[in-house]
Length: 344
Ligand SMILES: CC(C)(COP(=O)(O)OP(=O)(O)OC[C@H]1O[C@@H](n2cnc3c(N)ncnc32)[C@H](O)[C@@H]1OP(=O)(O)O)[C@@H](O)C(=O)NCCC(=O)NCCS
Image (cartoon, helix red, strand yellow):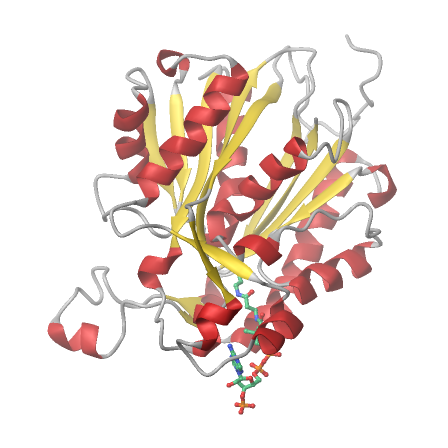
């Protein structure tokens, strides 16, 4: 065994457990080319660059083309991750796509991605946990690997949120963007990997952030479209408060499971929703500016893709090295939340 690995007595830190280990072999991400700046938004709704910057920290976001769908962005991110991991499409045994903006209600976006990348041997399904979806996907993938069901799992967070945004609503349209991030999980005993991923939900507060139309309760009709039921709705203030508390709970649970404190973490990658949420969580956690990775100024909130894109950028910019511990923290509609510790 690699002697540099920290020892984790807690069996819920599942690293190198009974001869299995869930390694994050490689990550990849993709964002669409079109940039929508705060100055562009000033021409669309009654807002200002100063308001958006001071309340959110977002400067610009990426917007997918009309003929570019969630599965296209997901497939591109996946292909980058596969290339970096040195694996062929046929080696992938499971594809999990976390999204709230699937190409269509069915078939799943994961099945559409399977076809696009040629992963002919894989089982494929979607996970719907909103902005927390990538961590939920990592946890599910890890379970399949540790239970010896699969050795190679592709987890993707991908969103075309621009397709469910009311571009006349200044309360929401300034916050979100499009993109995708992917990770290859592999069984690699005695290697670095995903130590723990924890998840939480509170369906009692689902009305804070929702899209009422398009499901079985409210199928699309002329009336539902006119009532704007097919757009994302949010109670910003309440969502903000819940986000800070839930992200704290999740982060503390993940650290507790690994029997470490925040000082052992080299890089904290929180859900990129709002700079003020990130700073409040970091302050309460005792994380320093040097530990924090933030890229929301360039992408806004990309929901399930958010921490996946950030993780890829943190790797690409050398924010940590092999063996360092990193902490991912998420929060989203549902409500849902989660955190993961990875030994890189
Ligand atoms: C949305 C959010 C940025 C608003 O910030 P806030 O400080 O709570 O602002 P308020 O809701 O108090 O709104 C203050 C005023 O700004 C206005 N406002 C809202 N959006 C605006 C915009 N884009 N430009 C200018 N003014 C805006 C509001 O209408 C309100 O005006 P009023 O006082 O005349 O009614 C903030 O609540 C937030 O980030 N919430 C969490 C959102 C989130 O992260 N969601 C995803 C979670 S996964």
